[in-house]
Amino acid sequence: VASSPRHHAFDPADVARGRRRYAPAKLAHLVLKTTRPETMIRWWSLVLDAQVVFENDHLAFLTYDTEHHRLAIVKVPRLLAPIGVLLRNLRKVHGLDHVAFTWDSLDGLLATWRRLTASGVEPVWCINHGPTTSLYYEDPDGNRVELQYDNFATTEELLAFVDSGAFAENPIGVEFDPALLAEKLDAGVPLAQLVQRGSATPPGQMPVAGYGAVRWRTL
Ligand SMILES: [Fe+2]
Image 1 (spheres, rainbow, N blue to C red):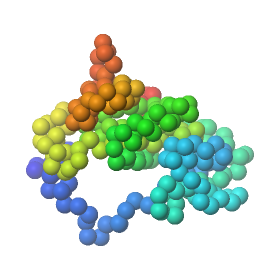
Image 2 (cartoon, helix red, strand yellow; image 1 turned 30 degrees about the vertical axis):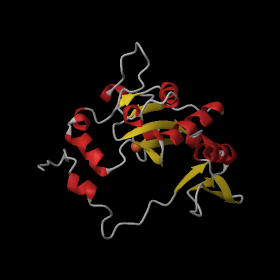
Image 3 (cartoon, helix red, strand yellow; image 1 turned 120 degrees about the horizontal axis):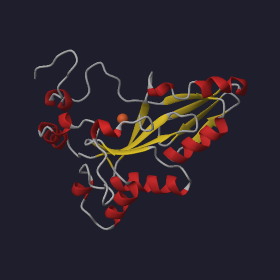
Image 4 (cartoon, helix red, strand yellow; image 1 turned 45 degrees about the vertical axis):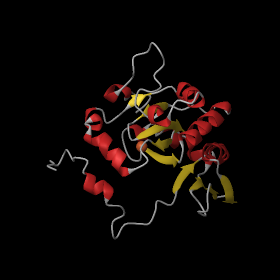
């Protein structure tokens, strides 16, 4: 596949290969610094259904599985809070944009959406990228996290989607209404339909799609 320095084609051979020889075994954890640790620990515990496994005056370790920590919260002195306020939107232009977590079923992802909504935690962006159905949230400090479901069970299905040209045509995706998607899931609409882009556009609304879906709020 021909590629220029600026455009790298999605090569099936790259995707199908699996882990490279000297690559790490897994992505282990993330660490966030904050001047309001209680609020942050509460938020992340809720969102990831995680528990605090260690905490002292300086840090807290949270995990949601057998890893000793998936998230660490480093407690920064409160008098430094203005720096955080000043840099809150830094991620929109520089550095780490977001981290993503995958649920193993659409059911599980939407159950999390329901659970968070019931606790007053609302997504800032709901978009079916094509490869994933994604809900983006922002923590109290403005760090962004993507909760996703992989729309394709196999690499072959993903590659068929890429080969169709749909991804090159719209690499961003189509926004969806999570309430409508959850409603359709409950009504028994087949998964293969639900994961299609545009499957949960509110009736009578134009789908928000492609680069048009990227705005200051969703950026
Ligand atoms: Fe992402």
